[in-house]
Image (cartoon, rainbow over all chains, first blue to last red; front, side):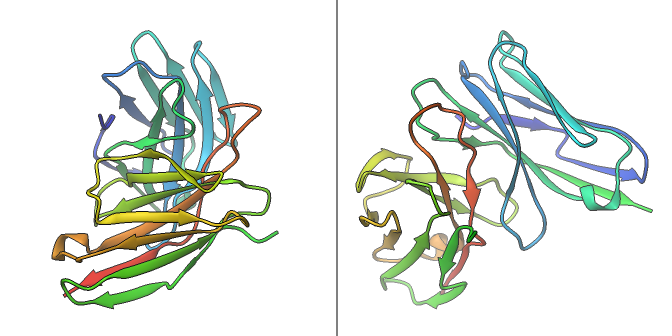
Length: 111
Length: 115
């Protein structure tokens, strides 16, 4: 079943922060985050394993709450280059990299 | 280091025809997954190939089939095309074995239009 992301869309001014949430109804082994710019392929940001793991990538970080089957992506001090659609992808144990992608969150950063 | 390459980049077909899309994985990767992405939607898993066999399959009809070659490259075939098959088809490669933590590396996709 497809994970649900919120919000569906968000507009930020440069320097503002944002949080994107990803929720699944299934028990998860890991959560992936990808960013896709218009007309381009999705680009990998990070993977989080179960167990409350948190990771950071420049000013982008994420957390994974396995009990709630939720993950959140945090973007701080946003830059114009952060614009794009963000997808979470969930993987179940034994899934062999079968990643089920969420509904997507369109992020636009304006000057 | 070449990334994932897909061909062709664009394709226009008529309803009822058949199409073959090709993918070469990133160097060192042995697993290929195919995704269908409709406009404004997230990628939908079609199937995955590993060791030249289909290892997993999503909720797609048998009209969608594939193949993996000994050099890990892969093909996606779609028969009896429908208008609803119009989409961006993405190939993603990864590594199996060692850990389940391999991220997906995507190609730029093939834009298929069925008229």
